[in-house]
Each structure stands twice: as structure tokens, then as C-alpha cells.
Length: 376
Image (cartoon, rainbow, N blue to C red; front, side, top):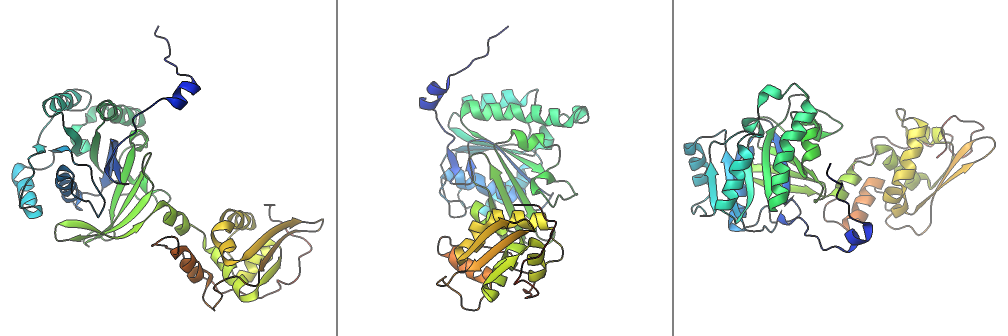
């Protein structure tokens, strides 16, 4: 039996280790990447344009790229179609971009074919496989979906890691949508994204429109959301949202309702149930409201000059909120608008949810004698 190969913490801590290199700054690195989207929405146009830009070392969406040889396995297309698209995209095809229109399957020939291509063209740093379904053996698809997905993709990841390259796989999304996690829209099990170093979802706003959103997540890149539009034959970015933008975007409306209330009334002392009534929120449970206040205080209330204190008495659990004199920017605009201005000072793009209810002044001056919400 082979021994486990272990490394002590001190050695690992000081060991010089090569990190994944970026192909597109902040967007695409070495490793295994998956791009999924509905059929016929422009994924192949995007991939071919990426091939051209990266093989020439030219910017992608204004971001620097690392020039490298590129292989594009266009397995769902014919030569004439790729030729036509390339002629639409460029007047001078790069010599270090190579195409393949057929290959073996995963777990059989494909890995060996990739190894051979890398020996023949050792400067290759990026390989596109379009699409995953074209290189899979569907006979085993129903045996154990997660295990099969993980096994299939693990072979490609190992190749990418062993050679220090990026293998970029194009995939499809299912018809059913998951409103809680867009990356669950990928066809197949969660094993696919589990193996990949990076996942991307391209979703059109309208099937027959020219606008879409590209969602990006990964181990070596920050979470991003890119609003895009197909202009001619190229996808161009119209708005970019960073991980910090997305975090702010997910702040619940209730927190902004509380901010608006404090900007109008300056103070609140009462239970969370009374606070919900005061801001006109009839949907949120008190325990969730308490959690939202605690979690997002530093994002929303503190920058506006609002202090927050939780106090437990024998009779009730109280929330004390107060807008302090001298807080900046209190000019009659809403909490969302003022925060947008404050956040704008540190970031060029800030997207905030809008408070949906007007604050009510009903019975907020005095504490209740009893309440059932959970403590913070």
C-alpha cells in the first residue's frame, strides 16, 4: 500500500509555489473553466472572439490578456461556419490559433489527444472544448450523475493543472431556472461546478433580444456580474458589477426602509415587531429582521450616521436606533440615494435595491411591554 504523501505546515507555509496565471485579467485564469448558456444564444461567437483576442494578446472588454497559442475544438460546427464567423470578426487571422472539428471522448481518447497536441504545440496555453456533451459517453449518464460528472471533468482539470494551462469547456443550461443560485442552471449535477476552478453562466434577458448577463464565479477570480449586449457580432460590456457591488445589491429592502425611517424621524426605541410596523413591512419575520439589521448595519446604517443598539430587559427585547447630529448628506433624499452617493466615492458602480415602502410613524416612541422575536 502506498503511503500518504504529507507535507508539514511549516514547509508548506514557506514553500515557493507557482500560482495560476491570468489569461484575462480578473476574469479567466489557468485551470478548468466552464461556460454554460442556452443553445443558440451566442456562446460560440463569444468563444471565437476570445480565441482571437487571447491568441493575439489583445484586450478583452478593456482588460489585459496574456498572449498564448490557442486551440479551439469546435465540435458542434463545420469548417465553413467557423470560417464565416472568423471573417466577420477579423481581417487578419492569427497563426497561433488552431481549430479541431472532431476528437475522442473523455475517459477514452480525448486526454491522450490533448497531451499529443501539447507536445506538438508546446506554447498552447488555452484549449476550448465546444461543447462538453460532444465529448461525453452518455451510456453512463444515469448510473450516478454526480460521480460521472466529477470523474469526467476531473480528467480535464488534471490536464490543465499538470500543464499549467486553461481548459475552457462550453456547456448548456437546463430549461428550469433556480432563482436562488443561477449556477444550478447548468445541465448535469453540481459535480461539474464542483470540479471546475471557474464557472460562467451566460443568460439572455430575452431569448430574441441582444442583451444578456454573464455571471462569473471561481476559486481564483472574484465573483462578477457583467451586463452585455451583442453589437454586430461581438459581445460588449455595458455594465460591470464587482463582488462588492453584488454584496450590496443583495442587502434586503428592510434595511433601507429602516434607514429611510431614521432619516425622517431621527430615532427609534422599541421592539423589532414595532420597527417592522413603523416602516410598513408586513412580510418579514422579527427574527429575520433582527438578523438583517446586525448583518448589514456596517453597510447601510453606520455610513449614514445611525447608531444601533440591542438591549434586553425583563419585559422586552428592545432596539435603539438614532441618527446623530452632524451626519453627512441629510438633504431630503432617501437612504438608498444617499448611500449610493457615499458608496460612489469608493467605487464607480453601485447598484442598490430601492426601499419599497414609506415609513410610518405609528407608536414608535415607547417600548412595548412584551414581544416574541428572537434576541440578536
